Length: 212
Picture 1: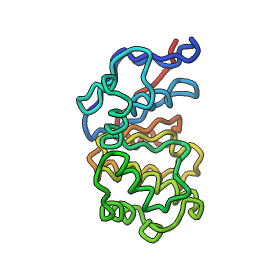
Picture 2 (picture 1 turned 135 degrees about the vertical axis):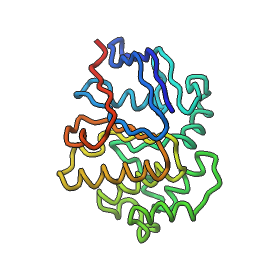
Picture 3 (picture 1 turned 30 degrees about the vertical axis):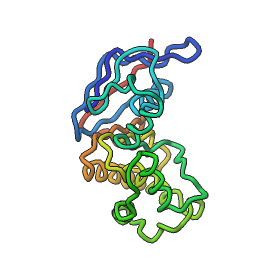
């Protein structure tokens, strides 16, 4: 589903990422583990095509993403990759429904309100379709961010530290949410985290040790 080979990156000449090899199959569940500063968010951005690494090869869904132009990468990401970032980046001027429809539009897909309603219903958000993000609780907003990430049935679902600041009960709920949505899409799931509470729930783990 994706493969990385000799991927390295640096900021201002300071190495922050070194991934000799990592491959994942379609539908696999992965944790990307590592302490703060080990490059987890950087690697997540590389997998998403948001960041082009200084060197190395990155392929997602049999596509060498480094070969894509910025506009082609945006379309590819919209169709194939769902992302839940630490900052949710919901557009507050749009309703929940229109946040999801915008994700379809940006991917070059036909806007499909029925699909958006289906996803919202699966996340117990059917009654929030016409709400705006500022009217939601944090938990509801996080679920909307997941809905937006999966509305296009991505092949790869990425989540950046989704549980680290949550209590134990909410941690379990959010992890269940991600696992269930990945299964529903048949997506490969990668959760970047240093949260040790979820290690037993995800069978595959890739540990970053930094770039040294």
